[in-house]
Image 1 (tube, rainbow, N blue to C red):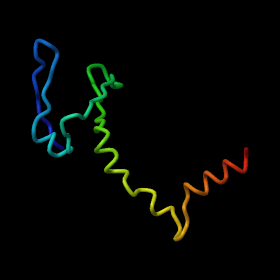
Image 2: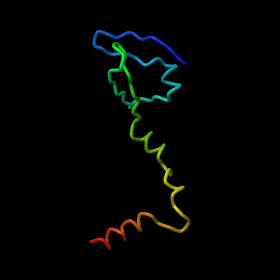
Image 3: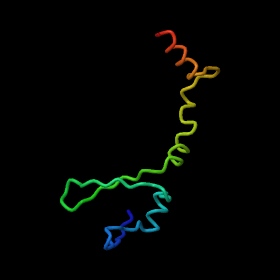
Image 4: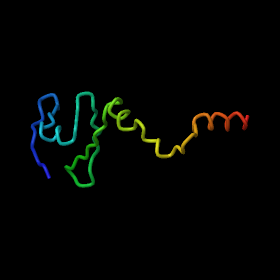
Length: 84
């Protein structure tokens, strides 16, 4: 477990330590969602990658659901047309 401290600036800004950014793969453009934790003084954050990173992670993710020779998009369009 990596533990590091940062200081809050006069404008309520903080920096993410380089080692943590590298370990988590944080890149410019990512967002951080903050919320209060269950314990007083505890903050929980969630990293939200930029759209390109999300797209790269999802690229080809549905291939395992496609059976050979089928076009699921065409099937969905045909199904919707038959309903109408």
